[in-house]
Amino acid sequence: MGTDESKGQSLRVQIFEKLKNRIEAGTWEVGSKFPSENQLCNEYNVSRVTIRAAIQQLEAVGLVQTHQGGRTIVVRTHMRGAVSVLNPFQTSDFQTDIIKVLEYRMVVEKGTIGLAVQHITEDDLIALEEIFNMMLVHHDDIKRFSQADYLFHRKIAESSKNEILIQANQGIEEVLSTTMDTIVTLLGCAIGIRFHRLLLAALRVRDKATCEQLMEEHLQATIDGIRNFLEISKDPKEQNQG
Image (cartoon, rainbow, N blue to C red; front, side, top):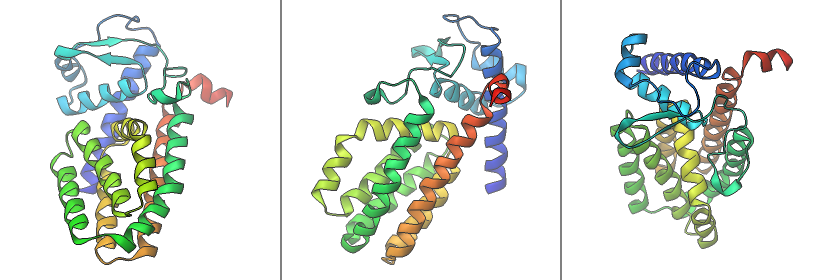
């Protein structure tokens, strides 16, 4: 199954790259309507799921916007300088914003899960299992999967039984949930499914060291994935200058 997921993710990235390059080359002007999913399916001979994922990636990096009725509009011709998806930061550096959030999560969530191991209840574990099952059921629906992914991490914070941690998490809920949407859009669901399954197993046996290690590995893998994605998405001219 991992191989099939990797192939699917690779194809989505390829289509994203082709569409991004065409936008940057001026094939569609800012404000113009983007081709429909059917048109792009026929042109590239791929499934609607692949096209939809590529368009979601284009939207995540600020090149297009999708409106009601499925109408997609080109809003930028280059992802550099695009408005940040993290509204509370109000900056224009997409990479810096999302990496900073993940670094914050690395520091906080590793300690949080270590505390949660000591206080987690059977009801908490049942709730986490239900959320993980939601992730499995919705692995083809990026929006619902990312919501479940966020809920999983929020439930771990709640399981710590530390009100300060819980309130701190709630205080930046919009940032965390918005970032989760972007991460899943860009990287897919495989990383989340793999690590959440392992985290759940370690939580069940109250293995603090393994939980902390897995959380660190999970977030580092996500950071690396975002950096790699943004690297391959750079304009070739920028790569040459670097």
